Image 1 (spheres, chains in turn blue, brown):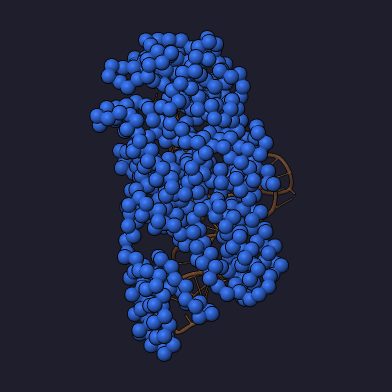
Image 2 (tube, chains in turn yellow, green):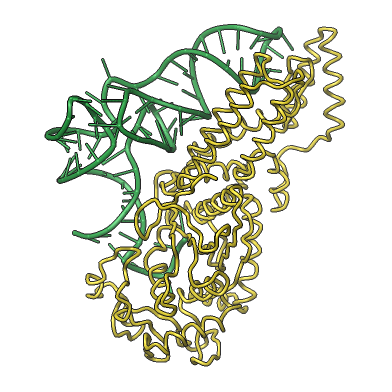
Length: 479
RNA sequence: GGCGCGGUACCCAAGAGGUAAGGGAGAGGUCUGCAAAACCUUUAUACGUGGGUUCGAUUCCCACCCGCGCCUCCA
């Protein structure tokens, strides 16, 4: 098996993956806050962890991944109140929307998708542990973590904690804290606010505690990998470390992986610029799920991704090339036999693909291995040097690639239909298409090219592209 | 100011101490009745700038410039 190396934010180095439980990788992923539809930037991060888990599994490792859904925070409480409904009801619909979105992008479901509000008891228990150790204090009914008691604070983000202590930019009016760096574990309820009655008093959890509580509940005290966007490294992940390690005395996470952000047409994504796209916005503009998936995964996760209209076009064309290749493999007739050179060539592509991903999930490198193979096989096919057994082997390789890329088989229309988007062009049945192709073949035979071109145009108007092949058969596809 | 990421051809982007993967786009060509697909050729003599180390750097070191992120419950 290829040695997998991943960049650890904690050490700023590439480190070999070394699971606590051999053969199984336990991952915690910071999931969505469900107060609105997720935007394309969120999906950049989720796409990364999807490629990561798919790759690990392709390497024969078991994956146990937990993703949280933050279904309680200030924005949710406010929005739900404004809508006049409970937070549970309010967040339900956004969770559903999120599930549809990740399905559209072929992002696999984690083994556990957990809601914060289902784990209040776990959080309370964790806060109690911290209280017993004397690491907390109460102020106005809220409970804070005392950072001064955790000397390692700042080890993840390398943040200058002394600089922060001045606290000039910290909102000191809202809560009474002993130290500006301290953070809330439990927040006292404000009048009219949703709250839980618990052993540690009435209130609701702070932002960070849910991740520590749920991660350790499902994955144990020490997890192999924790993923999230770069913005979460501080303060969120830093605080998770403080809470968790202070409670257990053990290392919380071995390897922290942070995905870089996505920018839109060279600009930071922001509501004021109006470039805050949801998946539905993009689908409504005619972009396909596979196009978006390819674009998101084609740029290695630690590199800022510039999400542009031009990039979408390029991604669509790249996917098209790959799909044309697979279609040719599947539908062409090859001479019997196998070509030892070709088989070796395919082996090499597979190992290059794995080597790329094993190198900190370098998707650009992995894709290069795929495209290299595509060109070489196309060339061999053109020359008639590509044989039946080579095709069988090549098809197996494409399946292997697609177990991670998940863009090769065309499920775009189905996925769009699931979200209520109907195809732009009326669909012609396969029978109708075949009948027209037959008619066109007859016209071609009698060299009635006017008629044959008419038929081709008619099909094109229905979004169907024809490809005449050397052996006389006609391949078609939806454009 | 602190911490971090990045600046490679028209666009996206990999890479490593020995002189530049891959994709998209453009141009020319092969094949084809025409298309489409595919293939071939072609598009980086300063890989942000200036120094240094070295036989040799774009790849290592230093400084600087530019873009971006975080340092405010934003993936």
